[in-house]
Length: 161
Ligand code: FE
Ligand code: ZN
Ligand code: FE
Ligand code: FE
Image (cartoon, rainbow, N blue to C red; front, side, top):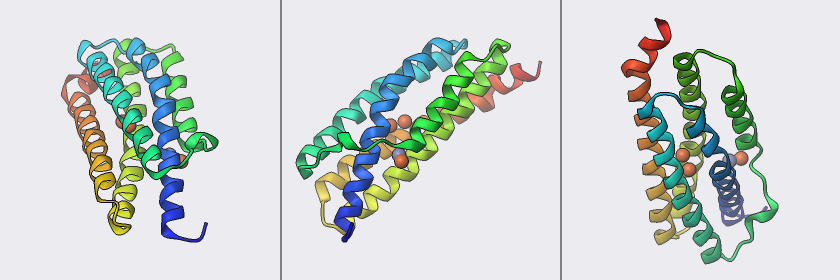
């Protein structure tokens, strides 16, 4: 790895792997959620994540890079924590609060990754790719904010009852 371009490609491969793993993992989160709004939030974000996977796939093609040799180990770990919560034998409201906590960790990791990737893309003059990455970044911010709203609304209150 010699140049910023090399580092950028490394980050893109990592994000590709992260989205790929999430497309497989999110259906379990949808099934595990009890609250209707939370279930919808997870399934809506699953659809967005499929879109994001296609978007990062297209970016890889545009850059002529093969992302399949890289695995994002951080996302692998975060998903393991999500799976742990999915399998947890807990009161429904408490479990929902736990699922939100896991999901927000995932979103924060993605926000960090895409934030860096957008910056590198701009620095390297990949303007159209920067715009595509920004689209995903905006969706991750919104998903995180939506989780926040759900957690601060009735879900945390119900978990205390
Ligand atoms: Fe994503
Ligand atoms: Zn990653
Ligand atoms: Fe990673
Ligand atoms: Fe996301």
